[in-house]
Length: 104
Image 1 (cartoon, helix red, strand yellow):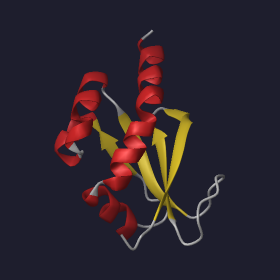
Image 2 (cartoon, one colour):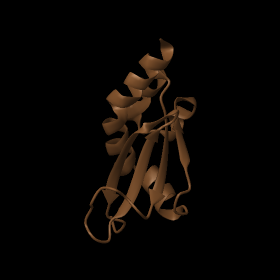
Image 3 (cartoon, one colour):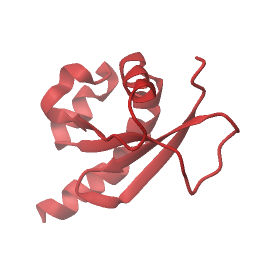
């Protein structure tokens, strides 16, 4: 039962996490400076690393996501964009991507 609830919570908030992390200066810099396919953990265990807007949902639902900068993506983004891949930790089928202009 807990597994199903955790999966639903990750699915429900995936788009919020993608939007907020993709726009957050700390995370953008971390990802843009990191290596391709280097995974970073976004976790409820380190709320101070998260944008304030995510604190409540992460702490309430125990959310954890993996995010990385990738070169190949099944979705299409504008030429020259850096792609971030977001995956719910423990639920590899819950994936989303964001295209990011690295000149921002």
